[in-house]
Image 1 (cartoon, rainbow, N blue to C red):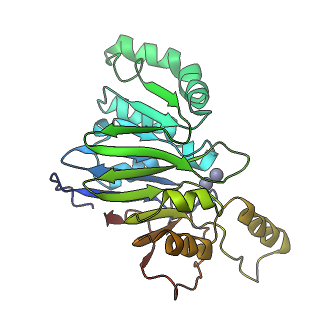
Image 2: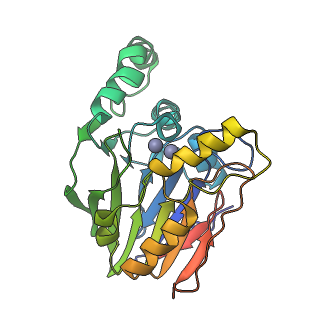
Length: 278
Ligand SMILES: [Zn+2]
Ligand SMILES: [Zn+2]
């Protein structure tokens, strides 16, 4: 269980899900919670299992008032409707959701469009209208930024065709964190990460095990067009002068392999419920 004691210096990320689309018990779909100061936090992505993992990390669901989404691939949003419902049912009264182009349409289709009637029924039953009707959802471009309780949050570039996709940078008390979401190698992302303290990055494109069936090998090899390899992640971190790189978005049963001899920083193989201080 996470030690939830916080003060004004707190700045950390809890890895809620470090897996990839293929479900497995060890690694949930991508999601993380960034916490700063005494009580602020922001959910980054909401893959399947996000509600369970928030509860496992001892996070009160009604206290999560901000969500940023990196892109609309299923493994990053399957848990989103569950989060909206679960947090509202737990007493959440406000929510702001930010993401790339397609975020508002996703919210409309997966939440409002299908569940509005059930929400009206729940409101009639006594649930507050706040927290359902007045959820703010906005599509933002690269370059968007907002300061929330002294933390500057910025949207940056990644390369994950054909999706609209964003990385997010958090700057708090002179310390900084980037969470990339999914991305292949990308010079603009490297620039966005220059000099940061912690980089949490997609390392999905690991080399396939030689004993896999050829069709599965081919699929995994093609992932490199859309995802960074573990070595790409180390190279980005080295080039950008990142102090600590955290590899995530792991395929089941794959151990990331890389050569970090030329990287002066620290490498962490992220695991579900890891807490990384910034
Ligand atoms: Zn993706
Ligand atoms: Zn993904």
